[in-house]
Each structure stands twice: as structure tokens, then as C-alpha cells.
Length: 206
Image: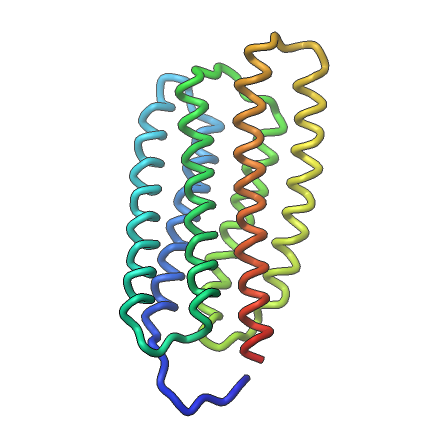
């Protein structure tokens, strides 16, 4: 750990942890969507929208703190990148739920459940990792596992696309479902971006 002679603003750690906890909330709403009746999906989407707004508020708070802080716990560009990537995750999850409702999708392909399970696990790992930014300890396994999960998400996504294009769905349904699975894949990518940013921060601070 690099020795510092200046004090650092520590509220960033709490804000990153809060942002990650909110992502766990979003992942649970995605899981809830899987088992919900179509009549209950709009209410779940409304709760997801509220969680996404809370995520936006958390991101804006980090940016405000960043702009008003003379001393930061690590490089400003890394704080901005980490906050932005956490916000992207929530945006993609909210978009996926919204699309399911807007497109009135009656039944999601089975592979979507696998996508969401990967996202839920990545959300848990991310929430567990954020408090460790204070000490930069016990983070290596986190970014390795999230990168593994992202590779798994890639495989699931490719199999889903193959399934959608196998001729069993009409063209309009393919377009609807492809947009949903693509957005969920973008959420997995965003989790990897967070993990990569944490790795960059840890290397700089070592």
C-alpha cells in the first residue's frame, strides 16, 4: 500500500458501496421479473425505475463530491470511471425490464434466466468488493471472478442468439427478444468494466 502524507476524502467509499447495494436491488428485481405473471410486470418495472433513479442520484452525488473535493482517495479519472460504470449497470438492467413490459413479451427464452443469474452473482460480488476499496485488500478474486462471469455471459448470449434465429420465432418477436438479451449482455459488460476499473485502481495504489 502506497504511503500518503495527505488526508483523503473518505465519503467516496460509502457512496460507491451504496451504489453497488442499489445494483443488488436491481438484480433482485430482474430475478423477480422471471417468475412474475405478465400482469405483475408493470409494477416490477416501476420499482426498477425507482431503483434506477436512486442510482442516478448516487452517481450525481459522487460527481458533486468529486468536483468539490481537493483531496480524493484515488485518481479523479478512476473515480469518474467507476461511478459511471456502476451507473451503466443499473441503466441497462432498468432498460431490460422496461423493454419486456413495453414489448408485452409473454414468455422469455430459458437462456434469459441464465443471463440474469450471472448478473445477480456479479452484483453480489461487486457489492462485497466496494467496501474493500478502503484498504485495497481482498480484491483480486473479485475482478477475476467477474471477468469469468462476463465470459460465461458471452457464451449464454451467443447461444441465445442462435436460439432466436433457429426459425421458431417470427421476425418481429426475434427483434423484440434480441434487443432484450443484447441489453442484458451490455449489463454483463458493464460489470466487467467496473471490475477492470477496480483492478486499475488497486494496481495504482499498490
